[in-house]
Length: 420
Image (cartoon, rainbow, N blue to C red; front, side):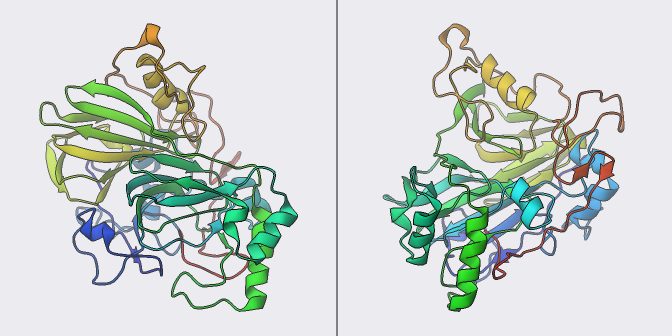
């Protein structure tokens, strides 16, 4: 595999809540002339996987690259059978249906799937007064929740949170949720499309769900809901990494991390890495340079940076997101601690280590790319492709004796629906 970015196909989804903000507000070109709800920027979901556009690997599926180039693409020691991250733009011109995705344990027990879906929403734009439903209110029991869902009285049992641009919320599997209207989101999540819906209408076209099917959907949802999951929005943790270059940790957890980087014109953005990175542009067009090559990344577009690239340089002005599978200690805690954030007092969305107030005695800038690190341990194994000897944990798509290839269908135990 060459040390160059991969440009991937990005299927669009014409769901009933969609609008035209991905093109008009985010500035993405080339969208169809109809309301678009979602673009799947990087996907290895079965039946909706990304394909390489251009270059020597043109036409290859993302799944085939993971299989043929596991360590070059993902990082040294990789043992998963599929790409572990799914990223999207979501235009909630209307409100999304109230729904949930199972967590890993429930997906394995109920759906016979290797992973569930934990996700995070990074808010790009939201109208004044925009809100989201996320999590069951404290003190609400199963009977009360079920009665409210039958009555479609969501506000009586679900938490309604204000939504503001620049904030992020980490939504564990099993959390009932919805957002919109008039909200534009970048979403990062596990590679899965399992879900259960509470609504009486289909989100593909707004057509009604018959009563028997709807009640079956509610029963499936009640079997997977987590009553104790009540996440909140967070502004993220900011550190300076150069003259006019800011790095914001939006969220970090065992399934993924998301960072937002901004650069002015004084100094380019430089990032070093040893695992695959999803680079998404939410600002003006930029030039992405590495190893003697440079290519433009337009507004609202994404590139997949293989681990073998190791570094990237982006002159400003720039406003981009990096999504990746983290080693929480090295990728998150270490730079935040070096910047003066105290591990005892701060928490990031996703249980990753975060803080809202720096530790005064240690406050100082941390420079990105100043160290060489080993790959995250989540689904990486020792002894593969080099002298990687870190203790590894099992992750999505792996078993102790080898890889397990899950089938991530678009499906629910109630009625089949497209993804969110």
